[in-house]
Length: 108
Image 1 (spheres, rainbow, N blue to C red):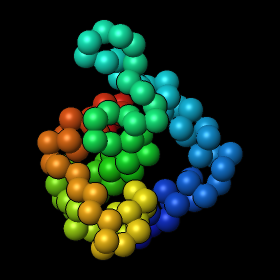
Image 2: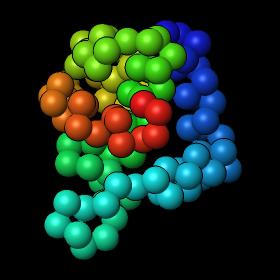
Image 3: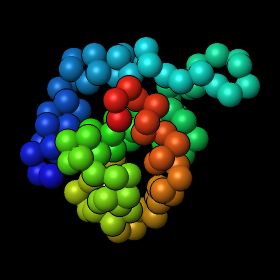
Image 4: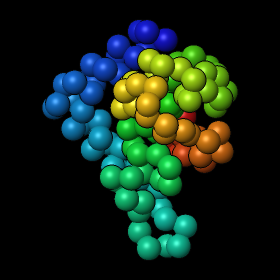
């Protein structure tokens, strides 16, 4: 897990690379269910932004894990990668939200 998170950190801290990755994610945004275009890139899908979907998808694929192992709500380093800095941040990702969002990125 530490190597996965270091790789994601390298992407996030390199502004040019991060722009390129987020641009690719922009291209694969899912269509809205009501048929009014693509989902909002700032908020991704309900409950998760595009960065969170990417991070969870990468972790799931590299570790060959199911969607709740490790469950993001209890993994401190993964939560920090998602921007949740400490125990006072009560952001919680429901398992169904993860299952609904992560597969939308091709291959995850």
